[in-house]
Image (cartoon, rainbow, N blue to C red; front, side, top):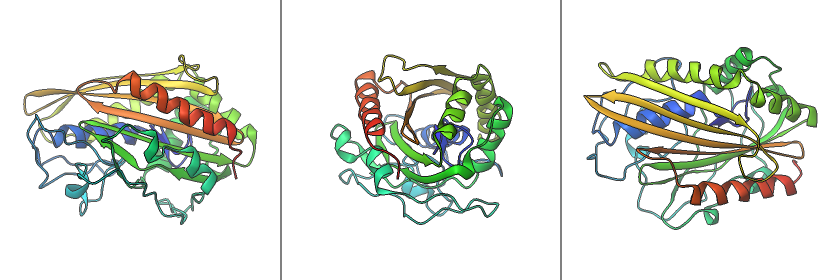
Length: 299
């Protein structure tokens, strides 16, 4: 859940867009809905033409919504072996024209690797979210603090790995100064963080639901501390979003771990429809990324 930085960044900070995209794709596809739509501020786009029964294992394949031309192909994982494909190293431009930091080998080495996951998880290349800069800026404004986006020096995103109705993804970002990391940690630990994020998530999810669907509840908590994980896990996120679509109630569960290292921030996100991703998976994967973040200085 981050837009490549816990907060105030361009990528996955337990970003509102992440829950929104996962929710719309994860709910719409299993329910064989083709009318899911997005608002101008939404990351989740329709999945017209992509259908499956409620009993299938279709799941979201990207951490942000695919474009309308690729939605059907990315709505469910392929049967191919997990891919190590990663986004291009080219800088990513935001809607305002700002150029984001490039992917770097050291940061890519911190993020999730195909070998980290158990057999069966299928990787799909990360797709940048064009709205994340503005959304994370709004989140920082709500919580209070400095937006460190312009101090990013590198940014790498793992593929999004899917199995059944679950998706796992991660990212790592480097900064000019350790003070940038300290600033973002303070935002994550702010008592305002949970309320601000929950408010934004609820608004964006509601705007993205198909006609007649309702957001029943959005319960999201950002908890400071390692949560039983490695010491450089500085916070965890736990969320549950419940919606009713076509008379069917569906629940999307979200978990995240926020990790720091030398001049570095990393995040790993777990999202699943119907039940949380098992701790037997979330724990070891978080520990692997935390160990690499602590050991590898940012480029």
